[in-house]
Image 1: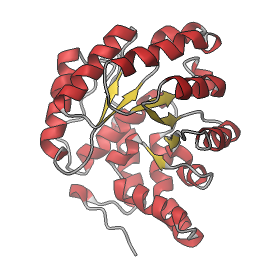
Image 2 (image 1 turned 135 degrees about the horizontal axis):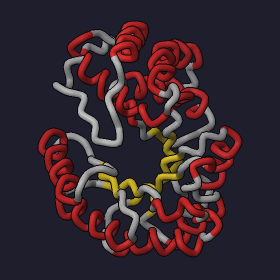
Image 3 (image 1 turned 45 degrees about the vertical axis):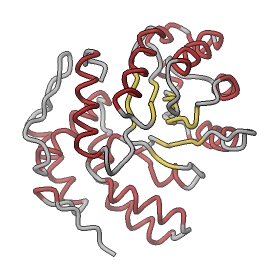
Length: 265
């Protein structure tokens, strides 16, 4: 999304809604550095039929924004003023310098009533659990949706109210099954499903992290769900050796060619 123009983002949303909009709610991303540009994207997404918005942090915050919560709250407020759609705040890891401290997330939730959830990428189990406990216990609870797909089972058992994960493009059935097993307190079932997810998590989230979505695109091609794994500069495609590792990981996870899932009972 970072490499797409406004018009391309609109077209992507339209195509998505044409494919699944009558069956599933569609969450549209809002990625823009300026608050007013973000608000423009939000207005467009609502007008074209999105059900909710995932708001990425502005790159402006990368130079110390976590020290200036008085910037983050108006940024989200400007977006919220442009749309009635529910907002999901993408909470980055502290090491990224684009993070929002927990106190700032609480202030956002109190100031912007349409914030319904955060996509938690804190990448710190202690902070992750604290955010779950604090945000989901507010007078107006804010759901924590994990995106810790590299350690999904461990994350879900801490009490997240859902997940929002890029690797869901490859293994949505496994992720749903894992969620259901955790909710049912069926540890044996959860561990069995996690054993299938593990080889793909290891493959997707290996260093360098910037290739995680490149790897997922390659898997979509290997499974016959996409024709080409196209990336935009400065990203470049992965090599043949890594592509073979992905093929092996799909096999280890029990996911066959041409899109077969085969989730065992």
